[in-house]
Length: 407
Image (cartoon, rainbow, N blue to C red; front, side, top):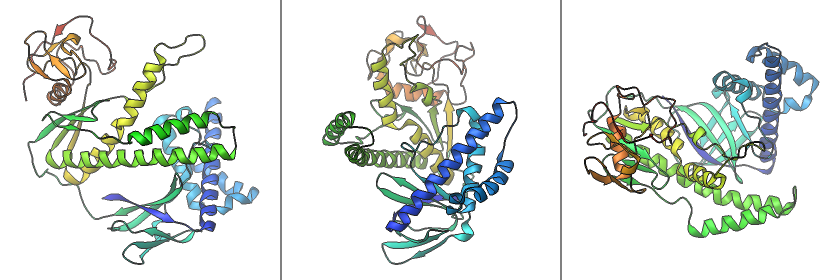
């Protein structure tokens, strides 16, 4: 099984310059190749990896600065672009901006990478054209190195090794027959059908106040000024802490859920569509833009997609099956009688069925409905179409054809 090992690098000044140069070259190759693909598509033709890799060899003769980066690194950039265009479409793949894109360099040749341990806290890795680079030995490597990726986050550089750890996914979970439903929300990050609430604050009150002051200061800075760069660096420090805490929370939650349950049921949420801006256009301006922006920030802050990725990652080692179900009306349905009515949810936390009078926490009730919906995504009446909007309200109180059994 392939798994990742991430460490913090301690680069010299010369190595930092080289890594930034590698990142800039990869970004230029990505943007140029993407523009070429789009131009071919406009003409009705198709461009793929093979001819672009051949043209890259000719471009290195014409532009010597391309030879600064290793050849297999640039070829890997073209492979990544080819995969992105095939999966998402040529015109949906994004450009790599100089200001917003963090440098990332992938070394795909594991045979050219050497890793040594120097002591209890330090190790070093030899990367093509970069030489020996020291890193903090925070965890065992645990396998043969297949590839390495050097990235920058904030003011620090990191290396991620792709290793073959020799493990395989178990055919059967250690606790077969166990299942749990998880409701992801903006108030509580994850609520389970067992009545457990899992949440944490990713930024302290002081950090939030400091971040707000820095954002106000950033709005008054002149473009391309030293003061603006300093302010952005301070903002990145706070956001990096919140990002690390969010990733740690999702990893811990996913480990607990996957270890205790053979099946974990989630809502099939289209998070990118749910967090789209409501600003609209000049001809048709949007409505409730500020409220929608606040909702988008709350959804991104809770890390819904990150939790799903962490669950799928842990499921490889535990044998857990992650199931996605239709999210329509899960928060408005009574899990006892199956009656659907938006009035049953009296508030964010209170749920009381208008038909049978069943009372429960609204998120727990939704998590139980999610668990019950596993394997029965569409009802017999066909009123829960997959493309139905998650936030759409039913025109009137209704009851499904068959009651949803209690877990």
